[in-house]
Amino acid sequence: MEHFLLYSLFNDGGGVNENVFAYSNQAGNERTLVVVNNSYEQARGRIHWSEDYVEKTGSGKEQHRRELADALGISALGNSYLIFQEQRSRQWYIRNCGEIKNHGLYLILNGYQYNVFLNMYEVTDDDRGHYRRLHDELNGKGVPDIDLALQELAFGPLYESYFSCIHEAEIASTKSAYSGTDSLKKSYEAFVNRALEFADLPGEAQEILTGFTDLVEASDYVLTKASSVQSKLPEFQNRKEYLHHYLLLEPLNPKAEIDSIGVDLQGAGDLAERWLLRKKCEFLWDEEMNSRMNSFGWYQLLFIMLNYRDEFDRILFPPAQKPPRPVRPKSRAYRLAKLLFHDLFLSEYLQVHESDGTVWYNKERFDELIGWINFSVLTLRQRQLKKPELKELKNTDKEIKTVMEFMEQAEKETGYKVDGFLDFLNPTIVSKKQKGLGETKDDNGTKPSVKQVRKKDVDKKKKS
Image (cartoon, one colour):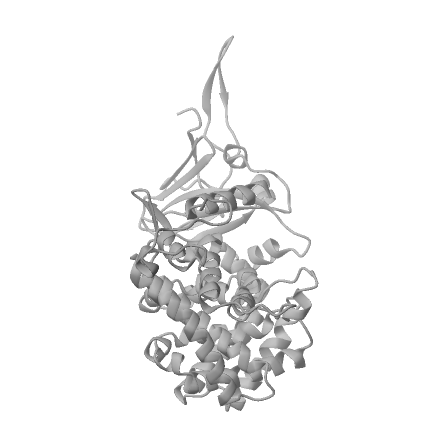
C-alpha cells in the first residue's frame, strides 16, 4: 500500500463529483490508475491532486498530498507525452505530460463506466512533432494501436495510394492478367510518386514504373507458361493477396548491380517494415483473412522474397567463373539448403527447432518457400530479357526443376530432419543408400551440425 493514493474528480464547474472515486498504485515500474463512475449520470472533469494521507515522521505524523503526475512518475516537459492503455477496451491514449502536471488528467466517464489505465510509458516528441500531431488529432480519443496511429498520421497518403493499387490488382487478377490493365498502371504511378516523398527509392519514378511493367508482364507469362508453376497453380491462386503485395513492392528493390558495389541500400522488405505494412494490412483484414494469411506466414515470406530473391538467383544460376567450372544441380541444391537452414531469418520462417536432440523443420513452410523461390527466380530471369521468350523460359524452368528435384528427394528421404537433409545433398558425403558405401567426411574430417552452425551465427549476431 506504499504507493496507493486516492483522488477526487473535479468537474468543469470546480466542484467535486462525489459519485466518482479514483486511485493510483505502483508495483516496481508498473503504474496503474483506476477511475469508477458510480452513477447513472455522465461524469467529466480532472484528477489532479491526491487526497490527504498521513506519513509517520521522527516527530510524529504529517499530512501530505501528491500530484497525479508525481504519483505516476512523469515529467513536466511540454514536449513529452504519456501513452497508456485502458484494460477493458484495449484502447491506447496519449496525453501531454506538461498538461497533466499543471492541470491534471481530464476524463469523461459514462454512467457506471470504469477505466483501468495501465501499460504507461513516456515518450519525447521528435523534431517533426509526430506525437504532438497525434495528440491534437485524437483530441482525447483512444486508438487500437498507437504505433499504427502514428504511422497512419505520417504515412496516411502513402497508405491510401498503396491500397488503391491493391484494389486495382484484385480487379486485374480476376481477368487472369495484370499487365493489360491501364488502371493498375496509373494507380501504381500515383503510388510511386507518393512513395518517393517518404523514402529514398532506387531510381527515378519512370525507372520504377518500367520495372513494374516488366515485372507484371513477366509474372503473367510465368504463371501461364512455366510448367513447374502450372503444376502448383492452385496454390498460387490461393495466394493472390500475397502476390499483389509482392508485385507492388518488388520494383522498389535496389538494382543488383547498384547493390553489389557496397552501397547500403534498403531492400523493399525493409521499406515495408518501416511503413508498418503488416500492422496496417492486418488491421484492415477481417478475422478470416488474417487467419488465412498468417497460416503460411505471409509477411515473413514477403520479406524473404523481397530481400533474398537475388541471393536465391545467384545460387540457382551461379555467376560465370574463370576458368569455367560448372556447378552441378545437386551442389546448387546443397547451397540453397544451407542458406535456408543456417540463415537466422530463413530458419525462423521454416520453424527450425530442436526436439529430443534432433533439429527439425516445418514441411508446409518449406514447400511454400520453395514454390515462391521457383516463381520469383523465373520471373526475374524473364524480366532480364527484352521480351518474354518461351524457349528461354522452358530452359530456365528445366534448370531450376533439376535443382528442386534434389530438394524434394532430400525432403522425402530424410523425414524433415535438417541434418539429414543437408547430409543427403552434401557432395562430400556419400550415403549408403546412394552408393552402398560408408560415409566420407568433409576436407577437415569433421561435419558441423546445424545446431553448431546456427549457434555460431547467433554468437556472431550478438557480438555485432
